Length: 63
Image 1 (cartoon, rainbow, N blue to C red):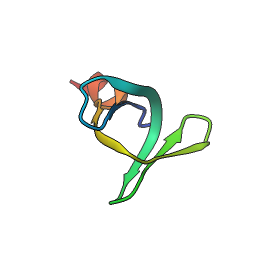
Image 2 (cartoon, rainbow, N blue to C red):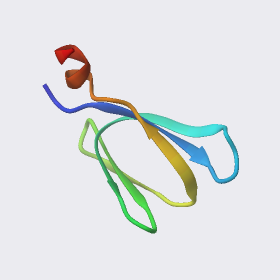
Image 3 (cartoon, rainbow, N blue to C red):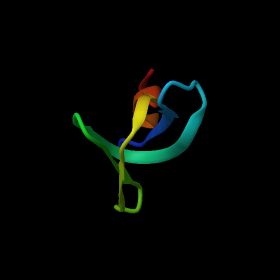
């Protein structure tokens, strides 16, 4: 099973999410966050304030 997670990104200075998607991998640096989707495509997001990353489905199944 893949390490699938749900990520929710929020606007700067707002508590309203502007994007929620299912991802295989998340890489973050000072300038951008890189999201790798299930199909292998990548999305690069700038100008976000913070994000919430769920536990993987596989980790939840182990509990």
